[in-house]
Length: 365
Image (cartoon, rainbow, N blue to C red; front, side, top):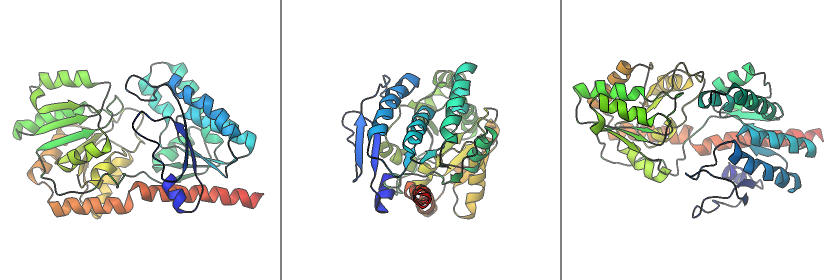
């Protein structure tokens, strides 16, 4: 976002958390102002106490910083709520990035209805005050309207960092890879069942999970029960540079979305990183990701979308294993993704929305 706005001649100031040691500030010309925050043992800023350790100082920093033409804010909703209050006091328009509905996700992470209702109220407050909102898919727009939010909203999409996720002529291994978080709403546990069915006819392949999730122990136990634990790997999260070659060497990446999770409108954005390396995707579940993968083969062979069903996933694995994509086909996927679904392309679209907000504000004054 900062790169795109700088390229258009705007001045950019970023208010963010102090990075972990050794990461640097990542500045390409924008002013980066950081301040310390509470982190968990893994180094994440995750949880309401940690979020507040960022939001409270943000209120004062945003209140006394040089008045900007507009503010662009990303969740969590508590940050959006702080921005709404300060921007109202200073009469500054703001654009809210509603890439996700946090209160819906919280319903799967906690059994407390009180917590979900409070977060829902905060999230509505943050979104309703926005001059404009941007989002990843039409499904999120539909969901925000159901929640009673009617702020103007534009689908700008989401994309891969194609400065990292690029094609290379790696030798493809007999591996399927699931990269990212796996929780109840993702339903990734079905992949254990599917892989067991697949290996009954196609031994010698591997299933690798990279990331973290609440269901890992039960997934490990199920793999042992099915006698495939020797072929199923669970690895810790890695940075993008380390993930790229693993995707490049995989037969296909896997993504799931549970059909009964109340999250069916969500788009599984991690598929873009896979496609940017030329690695096709097997997606199981409902929603816009299913539609995207079903329609994209009109351009390039991005993979297959199936029902959330172990047998259907197993058959998709067999099809990929029996007819793996050739290097030229994988390259075409990477080139198409870089042209249409890169972070740069998305950032340019969001920048246009912000610039439009600034023009309207100036015209009004």
